[in-house]
Structure formats: structure tokens, C-alpha cells
Image (cartoon, rainbow over all chains, first blue to last red; front, side):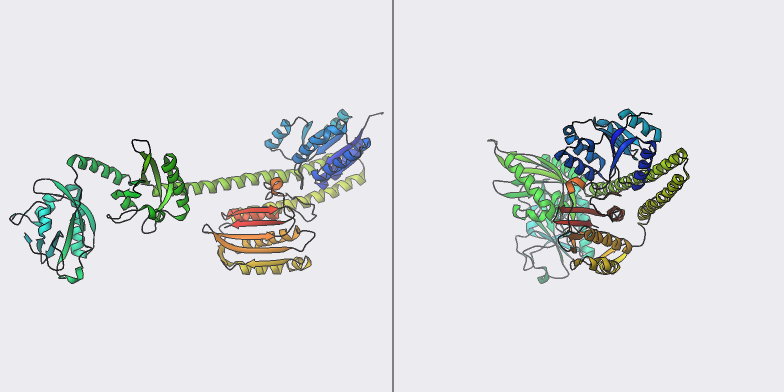
Length: 137
Length: 482
């Protein structure tokens, strides 16, 4: 099968167990070529800001999955900061929220932001994740 | 039968009085003529005086005063309307003491009632109005006052004097107005009064006043400017009503509603925490199950089962944390006892002695203002422990931690303040999350995000308050108001 794959996906989450599991899903299902993981919003923003100084096409993710509740810089703040710089990348970067929060306040807030592609509630359903990767590829 | 008698020395002949001696009553000439009678009026008796001459509105009060004076020697002072022979009422101030008479020089068998005639005259119409006014004022506990800005004098009605517990002949003065209010409300009074007397702004406010006996109580105060023909402000007139009882109820209701609101908030928070923190584990568990189902490889299955162990252990941690929180909520009835800050601190220092030495932390304490508090001892230790370890954990990389702890009284509440010289925290960014569960703000591998959450819960469960002040790179202060 000659499936077109996402080059680089990015996961921002502070839950080690979740990261291990999701990595496993992505690897076994071969959903993307490469994967980068950050433990909180601050780490990833630092990464993106460094990228701006030295644009390397293959280091810009095509898709980002971000958790909301994280230490140091939470998902909301990341989205706010990221929105300010994302147009400078000359690349369409799709942003998904992945959170275990089913709090309607969070869900409504995500809906009100127009640069969020979707809000996924944990637990992630594997074939849904597959669909998203295939759609974005 | 009342008899006329020359005043015994040292009573001046111009003083009006009744002398009661051996069941006989003598009347001074001045008093008799003040009410229009003369020596020849033989029917002038005590009964006649009480029943016919004293105005019916004053009669009861006067009788009570009179008999307590005769039987129990209780001094009194009251204003009283007495009818003259011609049927006109004059106002007297009746007292048992007189400034110009030294009673100890008089016959001890005699008792004296002095009647000092008021200079102004009131007509019947005014009296009628005055009656209604008095009734209304008394029934509603409303006093009225006037400040003459030209003469720089202030005037009170009798009800004002009564409410403020001043004697009936007390003359108020502008200079003494600071003594009519407790310190905390005087600034507001000054502001309102100035605005009214300069800009002509009326006011209507609730404020605390102070009686002569230093009792604080709440009043509703209204005031408005008084103008002359040229539209200049010449005075301020106002009324105030004693609303202490209502206000006390209102305040207690407010306190109750605040407690309920804060409990409700904590419950809501707790429900949110439970749902969120448990969900993150259960969702991991579901993912594991899904992966287990989708894989055939035995090795992979084994690995996945290992991660179930991890999930179980972190689920267990979360449950333990939640349990800790529930325990706080339900154990507020745990016995409080008198605890010494210094003792608690000593125990905390011992229990984390290693951490303190390893980090070369210096802990200074000053409990000289107040060292004892009625609190749950375990909570106090837990609070101190959490805040001190917090300060050490987030010490500044370029200097050894110095922690200053002191206790003091502020607004009659006990305050404990803990200040460090650590890295500080950006309150604008994190202020509202600082005390949340599992919130950490620094790259620090021992940051769990439970300490401050527990601390806040412990303090609030006992109706206290914790606030934080900080400057990044400089200091952090936690202020606990018990």
C-alpha cells in the first residue's frame, strides 16, 4: 500500500503513561514518519521560537496534539502564544486539543477559538486517531 | 401637703426644688412661683402635683424615677413638663443633683429634687408636633442633629443623646465629633461631611458610631446641606437611626452565606478535581485495553500489562491525595487546642532537618507579638511544613534560602507571614492557579502540585484565608489570616 504519511507529528502532554501508549499506537499503526514530544507548553513554544530563527522545513510539525492541563505553561497559554507566531511558518499546522477534561467550560472555550481543528476527549479511540492522521496527510 | 420653707443653707434662694423629709414635702419659693402658685394655695399636695401638674407624657417616667430615688437612692435627670396654675406648660429639667449645691452639707434625712426651668417657651401646637416627633423618634430609634457652619456649633435632639448614651443636658461640639465614631469609620464621616458642607452633596450611608460608654453600634445616617437665601451652605442637618440589631443580623447572614459559598466552591472544585484527575487514569486504562485488543504479539501484550501497573500506582496516588482533601473537609471538628507557633516550628524543623541543612536554609522567626493560637495542631504543622519546603524547593539558584516567619495581629485577626528570598512567582500568569491541584509552575522534578492545594484547603476549612505576594527573582510571601 502506498499510503501518504504525515511527515512530523507533535504531542504536547505531561502524562508519561499516556505518551508511551500514544507512541505505541502511532508506531504500530504507522501513522507518521516522525514524532516529537514535549512535556508542557513552555518546552514546545521554546522549540517553535528557536525554529523561527532557523527555519528548517522538516522540523515543522504538520499536526499538533496538545493537552490542556500541564505544568509551567498549560494548553491554553500555548495556543495563545502559538497563534501569534504560527503564520510565520509558511506551513499549514493543524492543532487538536486532547484532554481528559469533559468540563463544558473547556469544550466551549475550545470551540470559540477558530484555529483549533478539534477537541478530542481522552481516552483516544484508535481508529478515530487513524482517521485524523489520514485526513491531514 | 406641701409646705413652703426657706431654703436651708447652702442652697441659694434662686434654686427651685422640692425637699422630702419625714414624709413631708417642702417646696422652694422659686419653684412654686415658677409654676404660678403661691403660699396661699393650700391644695398643693404631692398627689396633686403628680396627677394634675406633671404632663401625662412625662408622668410615668417621672413616677418611676421618683420612687427609685426615694426607695433606692437612684439619681436621675429628666426633662419634664409642668402645668402652671394658669394652665400653661413649662419645661423643667428635674435632677437629683445640682452643680451649685453640695448635698453632703445638707440634712441627710432630706432628699432634694431640683427643678430648673428651661428658658425657652413652647406653645401647645409645637408641643403637639413635638409629641408626634418624639414618639416617632423613640419608636424608630432615630436621632436628629444639626451642625451650624457659621457659628461652628452642633445641636442634638434628646433622642440622639439617648441613643449615644449621653446625659440629657450634654452639649455636643464639633471638636469632639471624633469621639462619636470608632476610628475606622471617622475617615468616612469626615469625607461625607466635607462633601456635604462644601459641595452640597447629601449622604445616606451605614456606619458605625460610638456611644459615651464606648459601645460600637451601627446606624443608618442621612445628611443634607442647609442653605440660606443666597443659596450658600450654612449648615448640615441630618438624622441617624440605630440599626444595630438589623445590621448584626445582616452581618451574621452575610457571614453564613460566605461560608456556604466557600464550601460550595470547595465542593465544586473537589467534584471537578475528582472527575478530572480520575478521568486521566481511566482514559489511559481504556487506551491500554484497546491496544491489548488490537495486538497479537505476546511481548507487546506483556509490556502493556506493565503499563497497567504504572496506571494503577498513579491512580493510587491520586486517590490518596483526594482522600487527604476529604479528610480535611470532614475533620474540621477535630479538637482544636492552644498551640505555640514556636513549638510547631520546632517540630517542623526537626522533621525536615536534613533538607534544611542540605540547602543551607536559614529560618528566622518572630512570634513576639503573639505566639499562641487555638488551632488543630496537625494542620498548623502541615501548613508550616508545606510552606517552608515550598520555599526551599523554589530557592533562588544564586543564593541560600532565607525564610522569615512572623505572627502578628491585624484587624483583630491573627496573621502568620512566611517570606522567602526564592525565585518568586509570576502572579499575573499563575495567580489564580497557584493553589490548584496538580499545578506546578517551575521545571522541578519534585514538583507534585499538591502541597499548596492541601494548605489552602486546611486553612479555608477552618475559615481562614491565604494570600500570596511575590516578585519574580526576588521573594514570595504567603500571608495566612486565621
